Image 1: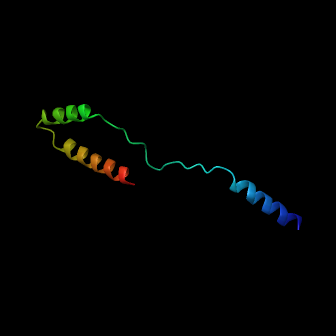
Image 2: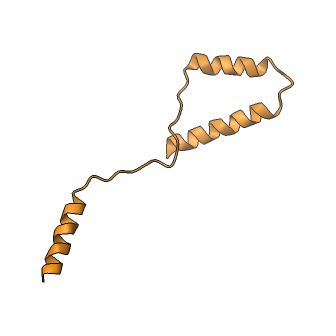
Image 3: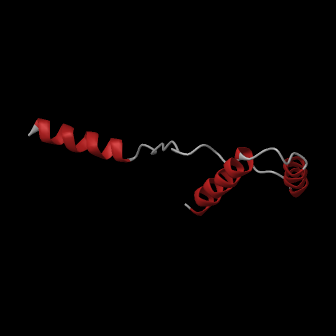
Length: 69
């Protein structure tokens, strides 16, 4: 009987403890419209870049998906 009472008391105490959740996703970095425009201008200024624009599009899609979740 004593064990049951201790178990019940422990459960009630534990249930009052605040839950701490750690996000699995890193926080999003927010850029101003001016920063985004400057980055786009810099990418357009270098026509020899092929992979970087594709990588930036993928990064933008990931940010959009994380914002929706």
